[in-house]
Length: 192
Image 1 (tube, rainbow, N blue to C red):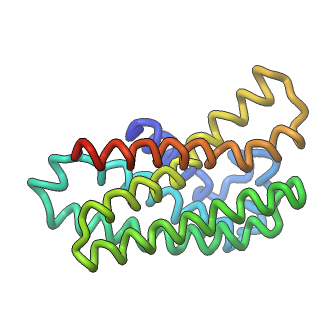
Image 2: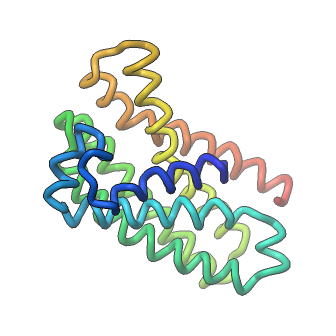
């Protein structure tokens, strides 16, 4: 999970080079025009992916608690910035209403799960905080699963891009959230 997260964060960070040739065709015009919402979303997402992947380390949580807390604050700010921008971008996403709703719900749930996790840690409810962070990072990880499904659907399965993209706007996060619920249920029985 951490390796995939760091890899996608690194690949996504290339958009900050402002080199239009590096951008995918569907993003090229937004990269060229320096769309601030897109850059806020990418920036927040890159940081959330990179930082969030380390937050599940037991060693970090127990031995380097201050670092865990600071990385948590950075993650919170990154999700807030990336999530608000993602919601704005979802309103204009390619693919029409199905993608607007799919990506919009992802953004709303990303912000909500992270906010609840933050509230729980302020209440010192560590178990509930962990559970909500599992959900939050499962939604952050949608950046990875989206990039797995896109070449799979378009390249390997040779599906038409538009219906595939509409499906992926949901498929990139719904199974992640379902898996998170399985992990949350398991974590209640076996502390991690």
